[in-house]
Amino acid sequence: MKVLFFLALTTSLSLADIDLSPTLHFNGLIGDTSASSFEDTGGHAHDPNANFALQGLDLGLNLRVDDWFAAFVNRNLFTTSGHRVDSELEEAFVKFKNFPGGFEIRGGRFLNRLGLQNNRHLHSWNFVNANLSTSQMLGEEGLITEGIELTWQQEFDQSFLALTASYGKAAEHPHDEDHNGHDHKSSDNARFSDDLITARALFGYNHTDFQQHRLGLNAASGDNGYHRDSSLHSIDYTYTWRENGLESGGRSFSVGAEYFHRDVQWSHPENPANRGSSAQNGLMAFASYRFTDQWIADLRYEHLQGRSAGSEIDMGEVEYAFASATRDRFSVALSREFEYKELFSHIRLQYSHDDTKEGKDDSIWLQFGFDFGQGEVR
Image (tube, rainbow, N blue to C red):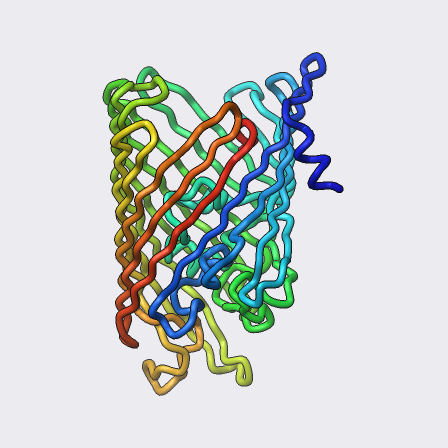
């Protein structure tokens, strides 16, 4: 009944200066992989976990009051690798905007503004699966913060600068198992798990109305599952050309890259005196070309540096920080979009090739989805 009531809200409820509007996003897929298990093809909870799966049924509600207050809440339904339906509250936050000096405050549970992908929901991804660095370094569900965030933004003639800082706790995900069937009791202890501080600086420059540059610098520091510290730094860059400039529609082309580096302090689970630190790097490069209003081609290359739990390091100590094989991945996707009034839909065909020490794997996926409602509060 709740879903039927949600679908019945086909238009925004506008009273005076209050706007209440629902959103609904669906993503399902079919496909197969030559890997021994779906778990071997990726580590993000929204990644494909079966030959046929509900990646996400995302129910959201937006509240906007004048130009000073906004709020957003959404819940995501999905199927696990055992074809069991589960759900999670992804975001629930309030936002106070347009303070003097260009400040805004957001508080609650939110996807952290760290890097190119983490702040984006599944329905806005260009690929069927998440970037390797996002899932490996930020978490199986991405980095969700329960806390407070302060953003300052200043506009210039052809550019802008936005500085964001957040403080809170890295949200836990209380499932018996995640979308891919992993037992959360044995989750990666290297990831942020408690108190967390993050910062992002985003600089944008429009060389012309048709050419845009975006440069982001990111940092995070906090507690990990070893009751020690993890830190992360990354840099991302995107260049975009748009045929119609700042107007909507037309052809467009984007190219960019993102580099992650993290340091993890670890300790042996049975002998805390046996401790050390380890580092890991990740690189992602992409290109996206919208060659008609409806057709988009995307390319992505990724490299993730690996570590194997139990490998020997200096002085015979055992490296326990994280367990992941070195991986190179190449993905290509072709998407067709459709639009009818307030309903948007897409079909996406994607091929991925993974190269690890264990072997080479090929995967092919057909994703289908639809989106209803206006843009979400971010």
